[in-house]
Image 1 (cartoon, rainbow, N blue to C red):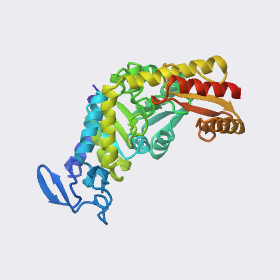
Image 2: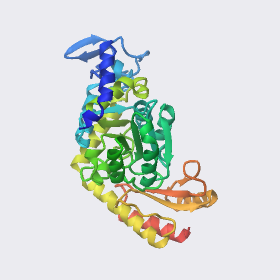
Image 3: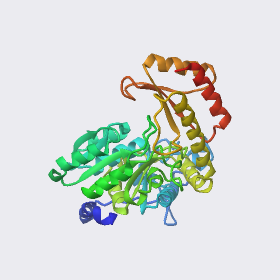
Image 4: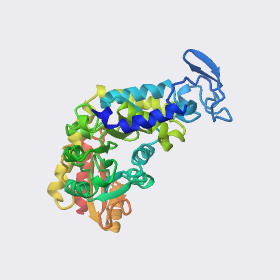
Length: 387
């Protein structure tokens, strides 16, 4: 079904094939940088940007994992490690294909700006991550920003505007990074079906934490099979660096051929790719990690809500590890963060323009490295501060 919905992308890819402009990622082993291996053959490498030979210099490190990619993925930077990570991510997300970006920001901005084109309608949540917002600005689509998590506003925008546009895109974070709340994905899926729109979800803060398999918010809310295009990052729960997009093969092929932040960026280093591969395996093999962080986060949120009900909003999904404590004034947020620092706790004060004016906050992020004792110790200091 998803393949049929993206037939317009398949036609564009066919047009590239007709003029011999179609490209695909070919994994290559870098070896010593001077030689690369492809299909069992050793080739002298004249495709790298490693001008001083430092990418694979033994003087820098004898470990090949500490080398650089040397070039963009479509030139010679895509290795067997990159290919393995793509396959692992597609398996985790239960999609046909995946592609890896040099950063989560590039994955979000590049995907939105590439897929949403002139003549399209693009609807984005007002509190989406800056990378999604910037991707919309770079696209030539007609853009509307809807009030945060307001599915009724999305419906009204579609009623009013859908018929004037070739295609429609709804773009949203799954878990919102500054509020810790969750998008109404089931309702957005219903609207996408009703109005023949494409829903794109950024799973950055949900990958590895939510869902019975750790694949994210869409799995947690039971809409994984209904959201064809999902974006993620390797820099949060995966603990490495980079971004990724998973989806139907035709969508991934289109991004490989048309997405500028992917085409014109050096591929991620083998070290970060290898670390991500190991982490994705741990997400599968050690579910107790996400069970622990979700339990701690829910405990923290519940305790804070009882003490400061006006400043801690409930989450629609239990165990989201982002727990914001809304303070209001910038100076008050900075004062309390400074006091916590003196008490031995780092809790960042988030202020405008990252969050709306008048909503400066302490953004508490719970991890599996914390314990119930450390969470209780933090709560004690927050209760003493009194907010």
